[in-house]
Image: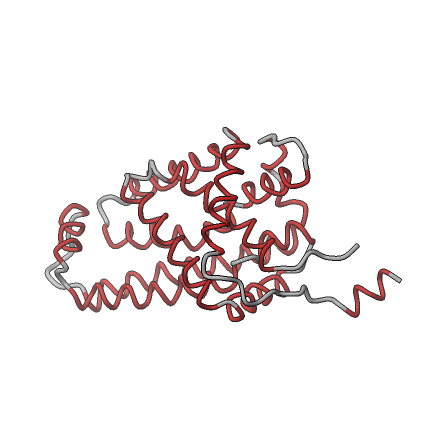
Length: 258
């Protein structure tokens, strides 16, 4: 009987009409998770911050690669936050909040998460190539140092380049956001396949577009603050976003009936 019901209702029920203030509720719930999980959450934040700093150090002499790598870092963020989703799930279920138990949680649905991760990697590589093309086509005045590049951005020099870079980068970021809003939490929680999870994420975006634009803007803002603080802010802000994403999943997708 259960198998028959599963065949009749293979696709998750996506809610619609959530208020514009919902993302702020998710952030408040995420902050509660962050406080409850303590070091286990901050560990993932430290990994985000360390990865950002290492990438900047490795490519500091090639600004065109720095921008591609750091902005592309946001594209693969949903996968690296999987341990944070598991911590929120454990807190919700009343299970122990141990870091060790979350490190290999991706193995719970290895096939689906593996397919999704491969898609993210491909998008990341395409974006890195597109970023280099943007520099080649639109950047004027020779390749700058990282310091002069930041100074030019703050002065809005090379405005054609900035507009083109933001447009193309926004396209990639929007694509990833559309298909990752709830996909990994769903694969983790419901053992959902990758295609169904990504389609459910896209449907959640479409059905709640104004509210999801607010959520996307908050993610960009918090990530930008993390970058602007020399990645130190990511130690707290990335766990906050990760935990909040779990609560976004709970709000957007109806719980599966037993």
